[in-house]
Length: 124
Ligand code: FES
Image (cartoon, rainbow, N blue to C red; front, side, top):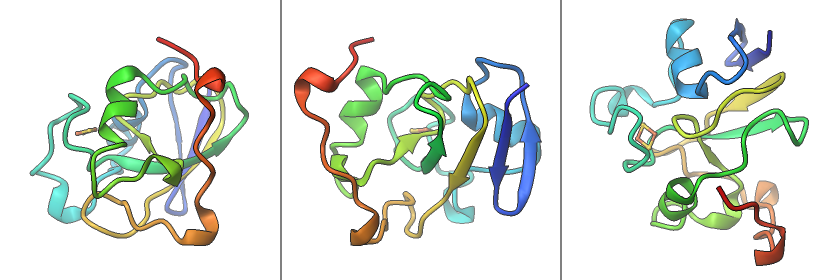
């Protein structure tokens, strides 16, 4: 069972569970308090569940088309490396970080990853 480390706590979930659902099941939220009600509830359109994820490359699904689209819409930037918790399924152990800002978009410049080349992207 995958373990998710988030805000000093650990949640365990079934493999394949969406990250947002796994966190909510454990009494945690990928949303900042102001966005905990004002969000799309997992449709992948609001962008407020954006988080940074660390783990093995196959610990989460590759980004979906909807996720890639939403993370290109400001205030998000595709080079931030963030993921939408509502769109990715947990496959392995993760360390999850919520950054500042209503959407969790305030990633420090030193943490920004380069944009993957189009040939490196996996298609859904
Ligand atoms: S909850 Fe709205 S994009 Fe994830």
